[in-house]
Length: 535
View 1: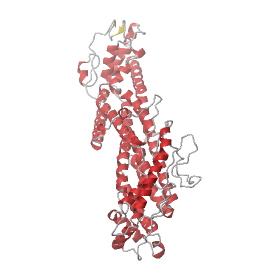
View 2: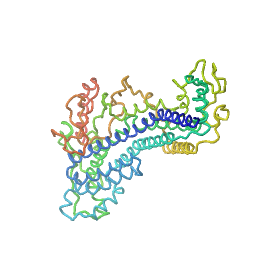
View 3: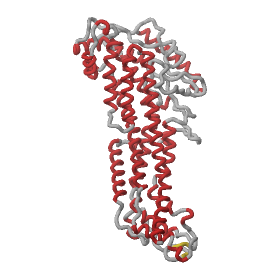
View 4: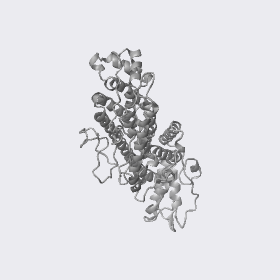
């Protein structure tokens, strides 16, 4: 009979523990999958955004450049999934592979017809790309932005996987003989006296459960630190739309790099000729292919001065081209329930409930119908009005004074889990030393409504991509029939590419900003006309 009671109480207690831990494990694993799905969607959209730029504006090199685009985003995808991949190396490899195509198809488009372009030429151009610096600072800036934003997302994914491992280990916690003995005494010994309906006293139950879960309670401090790091990583990744803007900015950085190479084409040709000896004569003096973004951008009859090896293009002209490169700000819709920031807010809301999970687990097991907090409760020896024993706290050290369960040694499995979690927390803190300095969204004035939707990110908030390429993204209300991002100017339908994500519509600015935009465009037009006249 005693063995039957031991088996029953052990099974019931483990079932109760699993019922409480299952929700937390499901929260972590479910959001781990959700974040990875969101990462892959953003990568897919950014890849399609960049591909549309190459196909629509730089069609001469798009067919050969798209495999390198796929390779770049495959590396970024592996990095976000935790693979040992360097973002900086992937970005620089992409531009290394892009340089031979740019040199032979944009800077010197006739070189392929006048000489044999082989692998030796391409290898030389790849090797000297970082020394020649044909794309200016844009590859380095792009690599830095991606590494910073994607680094937090990658670490968040690794942290969630670590949390799942911790929960899996705690699910297989073993109950010691002393624990099982104390549980039988608490639950079933009253039956021997015919008291089948009496419930244990709360203090008595807490002593038994805290003794049984002493090793589990030791996870409390590292778990609190772990959940704090999860919050900080989430803020670093999704705050100010950091990861989204970094991925959306890839298109702008690549476009600016290609414009830079075209503007400095003669200087690049002269430098390459000295190193690789590939020139077939005078370098091609061609103007950069700058698409018509708006009606007023290309109205002047005065062409920009041609750069020469000894006299590069003036910085004033690069400043003018910045107007052509910049994109309208991308604004998330208030009704978008699938944005990264919405997902992050949902995750943080749920996470708040489980910060003290391991310390509160004994109390949760001693709540509800399992115990009574008033008179006539079971104290382990008799029916009493209240439990008179000392109620101890959580943790191994406190169990020395536990009158109900003797804890002789810590659980080796849980000790290993604790050390592993401590080590992960330490490594994360060392890798991201400034995590604690990131302000929570509430202090940033996120303006979240009661329904949990986020407000539009206004122009002054800095939520603008670093560049959107030759084509400008139009502001379109989510309910209107807007054009998809990345559509070439003048086209009636987006490029048919099944590998690209569906079109995404963005919301425009506030009503007050809509009437002010024509005035701002007029002022911009006047400034451009003045600069054209000066040159």
